[in-house]
Structure formats: structure tokens, C-alpha cells
Amino acid sequence: MTDTQATLADLLIAACAEVWRDDPEWLATGITPIPRLGASLAKLSFNPRLMITDAENMFLEEPAPIGPRDASPTAEGWAPYARTFDNLWGGRRHALVAPVQIDRFGQTNISVIGDHAAPKAALLGARGFPGNSISHPNSFFVPQHSRRSLVAGEVDYVCSAGYNPARWPDGRPPHRLELRRIVTNLCVMDFGGPDHAIRLVSLHPGVGVEEVRDNSGFDVVVEGDVPATPVPDAAALAIIRRLDPHGIRASLLKGNPPAVRAT
Image 1: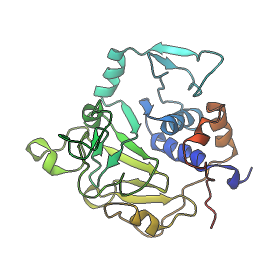
Image 2 (image 1 turned 60 degrees about the vertical axis):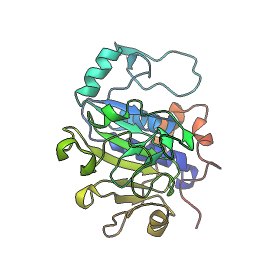
Image 3 (image 1 turned 180 degrees about the vertical axis):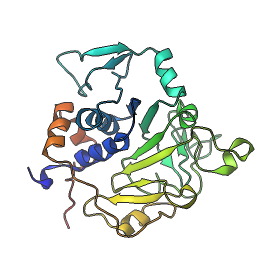
């Protein structure tokens, strides 16, 4: 199987999976289909320690495929709210979430676009983002890397804590604040720059540094030669196809582009 047979969605799923590579026996939560498939790929390929739920009230022996299925997945435990929140508040969870906006500090927004008092668009509300952001590690998925999603200044409404001391009570960071990675349709980034500045980790095949910079509302730290994001191999692609038997991932990115961009 050649690299060109992998789609960009496949590559993003594999890149999302990497955020959980070294985690212990924690709850892996992927919000929206690509992060969810990433968590499932991680469990089935290199980190069987991860806990996966059916998104309702059961821990699963193996991740369930997305979309319609003929049989119920095998459950290995009960996951009521109390048990789930014991993991969450105890720091034993790593969530990969999909904010509408993210800023230089890693603060995110899923609530409103524009002023909160008179928004241009009302979205989900802050939901669990405030508590999640101070309780356990978080990573982020941005399917459309642009200055509208990776914004200059602060996000329109701060829903989650980030590395902005001006927002910390008494100037002290929350005890469990830990932001790890950002996976976008152009690259992978982390918070490894000076003062937790967002830093380029890898570029998806065919993407250049300037394209990332041009589409980011803040400066992205670039250190030396930036490697290419690995394209999933035949084994990973087979798992992804098993987890998405209906090909839902093909509809998630406009035009379902290939993993390796034509030059």
C-alpha cells in the first residue's frame, strides 16, 4: 500500500492517536469523529492501557466502530457519571477536544463568536471546558487551520484555562493545567516554546512553514528543520478502516484530499 492511498483524514486520525502514545491507564476522550477514531487507533495499535467508553455508560473491551453497527461492543465495566468524574477530577483523563477558536495561550472558545452580550453566533456554551481544563491534560483538534480558528489576541470568550497569567486567580496556574498538542489540517503543534508558546512539531506532507504562519493569528515558534507528519502505514490504515466501516471520515474534510498534497 502506498502513501498516496491514505487520505488527509487518515493522517489526522493517526496524528491524533499520537497524543495518547505514552499515557498510563487513563480515560482517552476524543471529541468529534477524527479525535475519537484517533483514541481508538491508539488503543488498538500501541497503547492498550487506555480506557475507552461507548460515549454513554460503559467501558469497552475494544473501541466501537463509528456509525451504524450490527452488534453491540463488548463491555468490560460500568461507567456511570460518578465513576467517569472520579477519573476526570482525579487527573486520569486526556481529552482531545475540537474548539471553535484557540489563542496563543491555549485558551479555547466553544461558546460565542463576537461579544458575549450581543454575539454574531451563539454556539454550545462553555459546557465542561472550564472544569476539564484545570483537572486533566488536554489536546486540541482544529480541522480548518486559519486566522478565524487560531486567533490573534484572546479568543472571543474564554471557555477553558490556558497559559495566560492574567487570567489565573492570584496569578497562580491551576494545579493540573497541562496543554499538550494541537492537531490541524496543516500541521501538529505543541506548547513547547518559551513561556509555553505554541511551537511547530511537524508539517503535513506538502505544507510549508510559511503557510502555517500565514494562517495563524499569532507567532508560531519554529525550531530548526521541521519533520513531516508521518503518513499512516498499512497496518494503521487497516485499523482505521475497521473502525470506520462506512467511510464517514471521507465526508469530514472538503474534497477528501490525499494525505500527501500534490506539489
